[in-house]
Image (cartoon, rainbow, N blue to C red; front, side, top):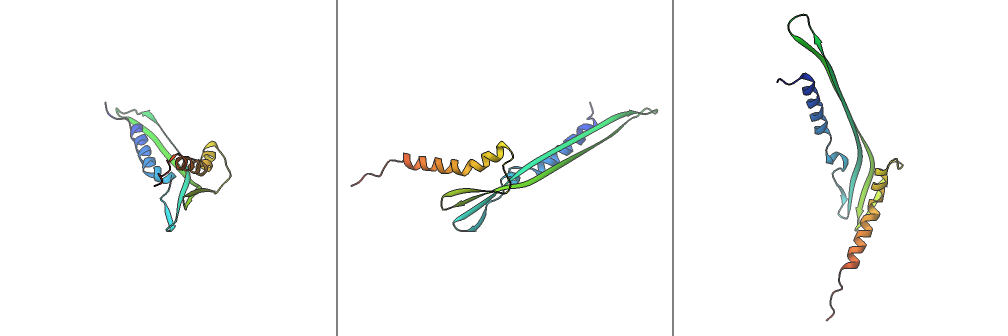
Length: 128
């Protein structure tokens, strides 16, 4: 059975979105302003797409198809993770809007607590 034209439109829209949005879009490439500091940009990505069509019966023996598709992507920078001297901080660019924003804001504290627990669990070096 031949592929219906709407399948081609949906496939093309999804492939275009996939090429625009990947994990590097959300967590950006690290920036190293000096030897001791790393800055990682964090963005919110939203996207959507739609496609539709209609088979139009023609008076001739051929069937005709009319349709269209569209997509939209929005990338909004929301924070920076700043890593310096073993400490992690979040610099928020906007107020907390959702649960995801709260999780991002709490990441540095979580990393610091886990790091402190790991240091505390290390056995002391034997004294001679």
